[in-house]
Amino acid sequence: MPRYKVLRSVAHNIGHSFTSLMNYADDDYVMGHILRFARQSGRDTLTIDFVAGTGTPRQLLRKPLSEVPARYTKFFWDLVHRHGSERSYVARASLTVRFDLSQERPARDAPQFLESPYTCHVRVTDKRGKEYVAEFKDWWFPERLEQAALPYVWNWLREQFQRNRVQKG
Image 1 (cartoon, rainbow, N blue to C red):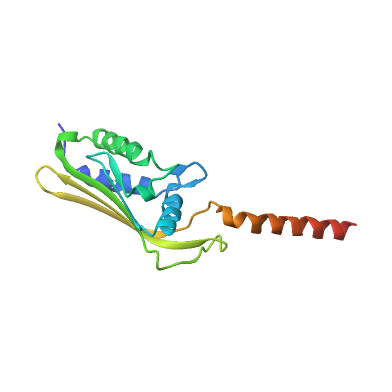
Image 2 (tube, one colour):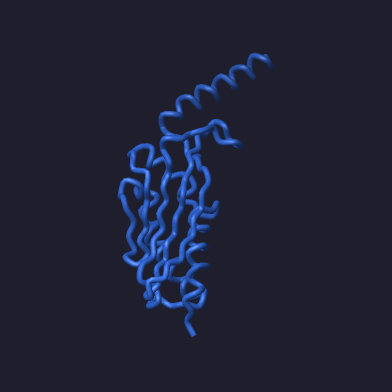
């Protein structure tokens, strides 16, 4: 028999998965891409509506993230089923990730990158109106090198190469 109570676990598990190191796209973590796009666009909040299967704003869902809402919507409904509930029990369900773009600090384990705090909020409302909420807070940084940073990296590599050549020479 399908159950409502498991929707709390579904909310937790979908949020945990979204903010995990297993959520990777192309050359960075999904959270890193979102933060990079947020800094570029000034749009600090991504929302995925699992019932509608959509994500907004589009500025945060550029390549390689354009398929993330569809992928996570499919995963959400799979979790509902695997946890012992059913689609008809869910009236509304969404995941919202918001970065605080006003705060930046060097990342503890990678000080060359600047991280910002985020909150991931998942809300599932069943057809009776009961809400199941999960929230995650932490800091994240993009690991992808921007094109503007590439000349710096190449210059640094060239200097290291030349320094090594002179020392050996």
